[in-house]
Amino acid sequence: MNHSVVTEFIILGLTKKPELQGIIFLFFLIIYLVAFLSNMLIIIAIISNNTLHTPMYIFLLTLAVVDIICTTSIIPKMLGTTLTSENTISYAGCMSQLFFFTWSLGAEMVLFTTKAYDRYVAICFPLHYSTIMNHHMCVALLSMVMAIAVTNSWVHTALIMRLTFCGPNTIDHFFCEMPPLLALSCSPVRINEVMVYVADITLAIGDFILTCISYGFIIVAILRIRTVEGKRKAFSTCSSHLTVVTLYYSPVIYTYIRPASSYTFERDKVVAAPYTLVTPTLNPMVYSFQNREMQEGIRKVFAFLKH
Image 1 (tube, rainbow, N blue to C red):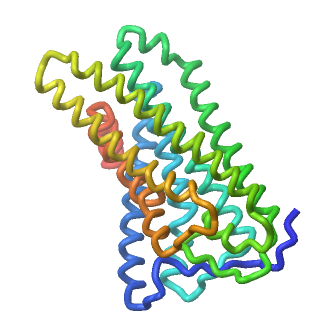
Image 2 (tube, rainbow, N blue to C red; image 1 turned 180 degrees about the vertical axis):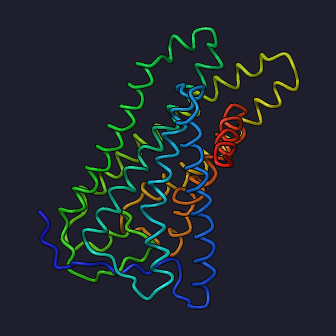
C-alpha cells in the first residue's frame, strides 16, 4: 500500500534552457507525428486487406499498435510540458504512464523475438511454413507476448506503488520511468532493483540473444541462395532488421541493468531516446514500407481515400 506524501511530480524535461524549448517541441512533434501516422497507416492497411491477414503481417500490426501506445503514453505529455509552464504530473498520471510504457517495452522486446522466429520458419522451412505458423500458433505467440508484457508491467508498477515518496518530487527526466522514480523513493528499493535486474536479464538480454540466434540461422540459409542479387537483398533486409533491434536493446539493457545509485540522468535522457522515439519511428520503414505486399496494401488505402 502506498503511503506517499507526494501527490504530484515535477518533470524537468530534456533541458532547462528556455531558448531550446521551441526547437525541442518542434523536433519531438514531428517525430511523434511521423511515428503515429506511419504506424496507423500500417494498421489500417493490414486490417483492410484480406491478403495481409497472415501471421507475418499480424505481428507487424501488433508491433504498430505497441509503438503507438509507447509514444502516445510519453510524447503528448512531454510536448505539453515543453510548450507551457505546466510541468507537473499527478501521482496517478505518473503511475499510468509508467504502466503503459513498461507494458509497451516488454511487448516490443518479445515481439522482436516472435517476428525473428516467424522469419526463421519462413526462410529456413518454406515448405512447412503454413503448417508451423498456422492460426493457432499465431494466437498462441501473441497471447504469450501480451501475457509477458502485462505481467512485467504489473509487477514493476505495483512495486513502485508500494514505495514511499516524501520529497523531493522532481523527476530529472522527460517522463515517468523507473530509474528516476527509484532515485526519489524514501523507502528501500532493493526489491525493485532486483526485479528490474531479473527482467533485464530475461526479457532484454534473453530476447536479444534469441533474436540474434534466429537471424543467425536466417543468414546461414541466405548463404545458400544461388543468385548474387537474391543474397544482396536478403542481407540488406537482415542487416536493417538487426540494426533496429540492436538500437533498441542496447540502451534498454544499459538503462535497467544498473542500481539506482549509479543513474546519471543527463546522459540517461539521451539514452532513452532510441527506445522511446527512434525505434517506433524506424519500425514502419524497416519492417513494413520496404515490403511489396505492404506497399500494395498502402496503395489500396490511399486509393480508397481518394474516392
